Length: 621
Image 1 (cartoon, rainbow, N blue to C red):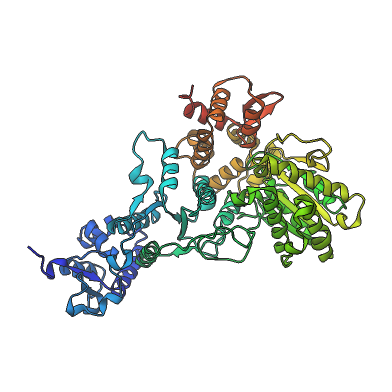
Image 2: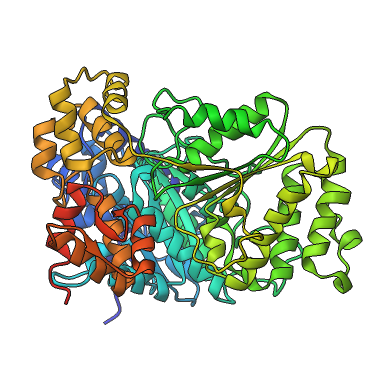
């Protein structure tokens, strides 16, 4: 039997939904609560499922329930606040413009969406609302909460979702700069985009209680560069965000051109900022590079002073080497800042954020390199005038700098080449590019035009590209091997966090994390905020609820992607004495910051890593 119009129920119009959400927000602010569906049910007597249905605006609810919900929050339901769930009801003609129906929004197109959100509120509530709205109109939705079962390999499942989905719907919390797992998800999505003609998954970032003008960490700024972001402030924004996402998914993405004329990285969605990501980060939150003006930057003298003295000299070349999260990029940023104070031109370039397609061959890579540096100096692209295939890519690149870029500037130019390890993955490009840098350095000793060029080269790993000793840039210039923080530096950093620690307290921290800059800063940050005590840190450091859980899971994810590294780390963590590994294994584990090299042998970098990986890698082998 056909249902009557009344049986279809009523749906809130856009003004009605806005009125309700504003009242809910005012109520939750007044009583300092989150305003979850369960809390709304307790206050109003309307079931959580019905409340969810009403807030989504996609399915009819009984008129009496709407009145009850409105009355509970001191609202009066008027005729303009609701409409029939049946859009062709003659009495509601015109009202459908206020809130699109599901069939109008979704059309017949069905896609796969991975909704990535943290388990804390309000992220989880928004994630669940998005999941229900998408599923209700036929889209396939993946979430970690619903699609990872007890016993599943978490990392494998996340990778599966990323590979399968058409869209990555990314909810970014205010603490995103500290989340290595979330950053890694975005990195994986970007790498998948680069490897696919359709550029999927398309990334849709939504900031949850996280203003658009608040900075992301350096890596996320790079990965999300040119991708339009949305901001969710209160529950009143939920229906607006849902409607926009549904409309976007209903559209067929514009085809991606085979070859983009612009030689800089491209994205599917529109540009949100014209600013190129710079190698700086927030001074308060430990997560990424430290801002050049931050009170939390720790100088490891005489390293900084030597770098400042070197970079103002003609023919300067500084090589900074250290494992991940030891402060390499922060030091590079300080040197570039020092150079800018002298009136020098500075160009930071992070190879980790370069699209994979750029590494297709040497010619394309060097064209991109020239175009990028030129754009950063606000110079028009003149590659066509200086690129002649008969001379080869290296000669063309040298000519572009010698005859165009360097003559156009009146001051020295400092190129900061960060994470040059990425180039090592492409040996044919690496050998020629690194040889070119060495050739430019030698040219600067005898020709005035090249004296303008100063180089900073930053890397994590030992250089395992076989090179002629006279063609390598890694045996000339000023070498900088960044050490861990010492006892005095940690005590000084604690004082900057308003923690007046004794020597014994410093030793308690270093017994767990050593002098690892990132791990030390995370501990001091949380202890200074009274999130936990030093004793509690020692008890919970390796647990899934501990302050290092995200960092440790990211490192475990890295290892599980490379079984040989996981096996090597398992052996090192299980042993009470140094372990000898194959050279390549040792180099890579050192570059990840997980081990210290003692001659040809390895030990865990800190007790935190020994305990965590001894437990989590014990099943291997």
